[in-house]
Image (cartoon, rainbow, N blue to C red; front, side, top):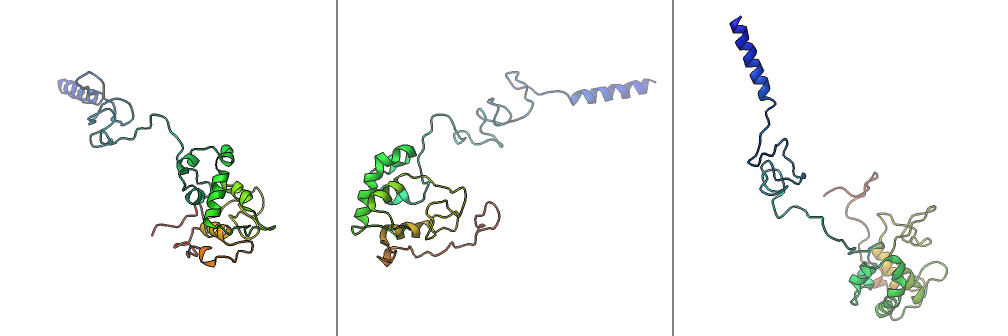
Length: 211
């Protein structure tokens, strides 16, 4: 009977140890180490940083403060080509609704500097003159057609969206330098890169796999 009492006592003591919680020097109960609770606990050497689990102190990401837009690029290459006269950063932080008034004339000046012989381009219906073309370009948003073909430019449709295989650089060069029929300045209407260096995937997200 006495032996049974000792066994019962040992079992009770062992079970109670499972529920003992550790405390740090400040009597804060440490239940689980975490890097996002706003408390310096576990092996952390600072609040939510340091130790073997969290980011090193001083290198943890800080998302506080105010953020500003730094890049538009709705249509790749627009600001790269036309925003090189000291207003590239200003263009990037301008809302699309204000772009035409602020930058159309700057774009037109740059277009005629790039191609002084520009009259119209190879778009269907006779092409666009310099003022009309740069009005389209200065509103740097990617248009998407709800119906019909999605293409950056396929010879008929223009800016109805963009597929990964669209050669936006060649299209841009053609419309800037190619003239009304697309046959002017042949040395300037292509970058010489006919296709991607890896095949795009046929399933989402469609990007080519790693090399």
